Every structure is written in C-alpha cells, then in structure tokens.
Length: 294
Image (cartoon, rainbow, N blue to C red; front, side):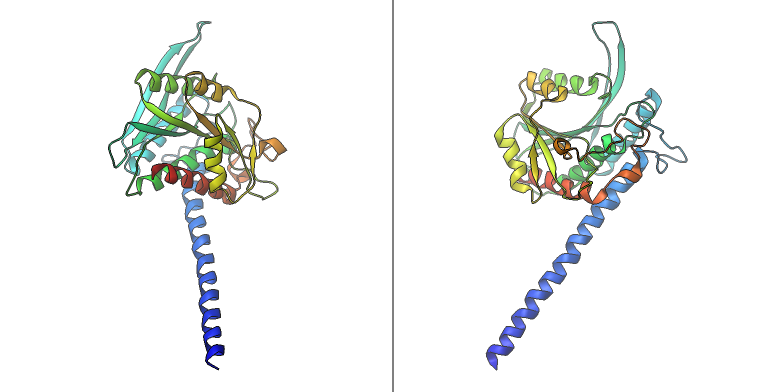
C-alpha cells in the first residue's frame, strides 16, 4: 500500500511538471510573438509606425529615414545607446548613396575588447512591404538584443546593427564593415539574419551559411530543429570575409525551397509571416548569443 501511494505521488508530481512546463513554453512563445508582431506590423505598414503614418515600403529615402528613426528609438527603449551612422558615398560610376546604419553596443560586464555583431538589413525594394525580407530579421535581432540586455554576466561586447540599403548594392553593410575595420574593433564574428518568417512545412528548420565550422556548430548545438548547410556563398558574406571577419548567415530553409515566394514583391506582407517559426528561431539565436556571453 505504501508503495502504491508513493507511486501515485510520483506520477502526480511528474505529470504536474509536464503540465506546468507546457503552459510556460507557450507563454514564452506568446511573449516573443507579441513583441515581434508589433515590430513587423509597423515596418510593413500593417499598423501605423508613428501617429497615423503607415509605411508602404522601406525603399525611398523618406521611408528609410522613418524606419531608421523607429529603430533608433527601439534601441534606446531597451537601454542601448543608439548611434545613427550616416554616410554619403559615391561609387566608381559616380552614383551617389546616402543613408544611415543604426547600431548600438551592449557592453560586456567584464573588461574585454572582444565584440560579437548581430544584424539585419531594414530596407526593401520599391513597392514591397518586406515582411519576410527582412522585417522578420529586424524583429528577431531586436528580441535577442532585449534579452541580452537582461543578462547579468556578459564576457563579450555585442553590437546590434540594422543595415541600410542592402537592396542597393549592399551599401549599408559595406560601410559598416569598413567602419569596424577602420576603428579596429576586435570582431569575433558577424551574425546576420535574413528571410526569417516562412515555414510552409512547419518543421521550423533553419539554414546556415558559415565561414567556419565552429560558428555552424554553435547553432547546431542550440537547435532542436532541422539544420541545413548552405553551400553557395552570398555577396554579403564575401564583404565580411574579404576584410577578414568570420561570419554566419541564418535564414529559412532556402535550400529546399521552403521560403516565401513573395520576396521582392508587393505580396511580401505581414499576413504571410509565420510568427511561431520566427519565435522559434529567435530563441535559437538568443541561446547562441547567451553561450557566447558566458
């Protein structure tokens, strides 16, 4: 009889823990989704970004400025001192580019000169709301930044950056990488997020394009979802690598075609975003950053 009662007690404790853990997980996911829905909604014109103003795309100079102002304030709102790194440059053909990268530093809690960069581009092509490409990357980056700010111990400095004019010859990230090199930042790695909001087969898989196996392994260790390796390099990766920086790009499952068919189109809207998938990947990226911070 005592054994029977003890067994019942163990069963009750075990099942209670499972039941309790499930709502906690769901609550955490819902919390992430609420934060990210607001950001993606404002960046895509689904809801007003300021007053009654709604964005149509983030391609024109005026709408990119509105977006930059919004991101500047978002960083400030979570306790990061934001920087508007404006540029006005000319390419070899005489074409002029004017824009601004928005970034901020989350300082280490110990003395170190090491930096980890996490970023996403915020612009779009003309007439595209740019939900999956790349409002979701911005929303993921913001969530991770907010969580990093709450860590009591950070052995690395983190730079959170939103690139301008990615869709225009990748000018924003070119200017930012050159700035890092010129100012001699000791960058351990650059982590870039893109195409993160479409999961048609609902397996929550991610794809990685890494300059070395250590970076790729860091994400595989933190992922309970399928992880695919991208074989083809991208121009952005080459920009980072050319100047000697290790880099990794985190995307949806591009390799197997599980990516939004609406990228660069008017239908790349808020309503096409799989926010549960975005939340899942956000947790993976944060866990990688948290491990790096230890």
